[in-house]
Image (cartoon, rainbow over the protein chains, first blue to last red):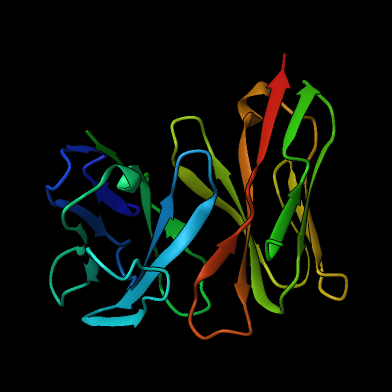
Length: 113
Length: 111
């Protein structure tokens, strides 16, 4: 019974490139959350999605960041034209419902050269 | 001021000691989570609670809704308990399930 799977674990990009982070929720979970942990800082909410719908994106930067959770396949967090300040650990969590416990993946560590 | 405040920020203990980590929050909540983040960076959910007390092994979590305060206790601490412990709340004042996190408590248990 696999947990939340994130890949890649580590991602290195040069400034200006695109970064794609993937998250496969636990089996049976249809709610996905993305969080970002900047170096030496706490976790911050980015976006909450259900299948094919963005429910709450109030934590997403206004530009360059987007997220999707298609009917088939993993949720994707996409960062276009990356900058050094995007270097962080990005965590995905999933839950079976609105008020259910969230289970976290191991995160993707994004480094921008 | 952060919506979720943890204390202490850093805690060093000797193996076997009883440990308490505190969390105070300033918003109405529907649930509070305690999470553990190991040096490798992965996050494990320890507890989700909305009232009273929960126990799992050597870990105990309590919450006082009226005082907007929660504590995480570790009995008979062990070096493998060394990690960052994070308190997170789900606000009842906003829609959705977003969590707001404390800054974490770095616990080091020495043998």
